[in-house]
Length: 502
Image (cartoon, rainbow, N blue to C red; front, side):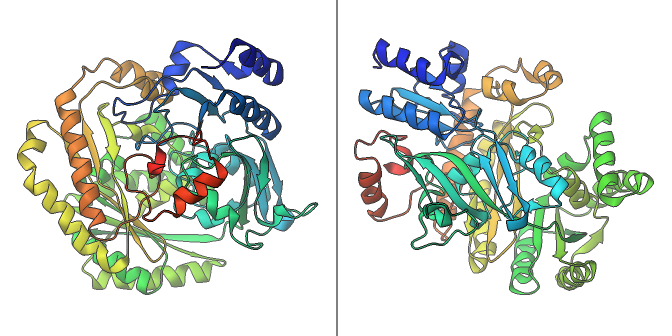
């Protein structure tokens, strides 16, 4: 337990505003998308504004031997950002500074900076991050993404990390005194050591991101009759011309295209118009969302592809090669309104609940190309075996498949009627809080979803899946190397104890 003198010293070092003891805020700091009942309310929350304040706080907490859990937006579903023992949460929300070094194509972002804020800072420079932002980037943080090892984490090229005892280290080219962090690899890849660690090795305070010019994009969409056909087509794309692929089952596509409110539609029109340079064309594109939905009535799955290149000709050439593969695989071409809209408005947390306010939680796996189609069939078999339970609890299952390289990410998502938590209320709009905030609890359905997620995770793992945001749900990497690193960086096991099995 922290001594009163230590708490006062923390106030002196960080200011009273950085010490959070409000019970509602403490409860939020112990929450994620699907709590399992094992989280412990933290003693207090610290919100340092920069590396120096974080280091000062960590030194003082080390004297008390307090456990520390670093936290970003909290939009996790694996228990990786909540305390499971008594301790303190380090909230990075106040670390939002952004420095853009356009000439050398990198940016330094505070760990609490959102992806949407970074995109706004990069827009005047005509640049984008090499790391792929998550769709929740209107609220999710760059530090959180680095800690959870999102797709494209090769785009993180340097870090500032505060270790358990309060020392500060920098990685990549930043390790050299006076150097700038333009390059990730300088000796052993220490940046990679902290990527995906779920906060077990230290508190990230600054992230350096490689920047790229925006390039050119061209889109196409296709209807398919089965998920296996889609998975096989994605594999063929990545073994051939490459590009980006995103696929939905029909229910997910209808959710994305068929329930857009007037205000949402107008914002999407404006965003598409900004990309296309034509308001009238944007209206046609967004109206195409409804047309795309109508055409998908005959297709249980839709596959949306993106060709990219430094020039329009290169983007179109890649898309043409991708289109030929999709048509050869039996896809029926439909209007590309879905990928156009997603490209124009890439950030939203609306999807953290269903269209009628249902609770949502996914389970995912990154599969090698050769394993993806058969793994999809194995997961479909899990759902078939448990069809009676799924029907009894009125659980809806949607599918998402994606790829931008030599892998397929498979992400079934579960929706069911159940009470929403304070974390949902924090991020939903005022209108949706009023609409969905009084749903009664449904513990039986929640327990069924939890069991389904375990079964799906295990089926994926049997086919060689790896995972992001390992937390306390996915199996950590095998072997004792993580434990040996932990013993060096955090010998008292104070950093997010229990995460990744450490």
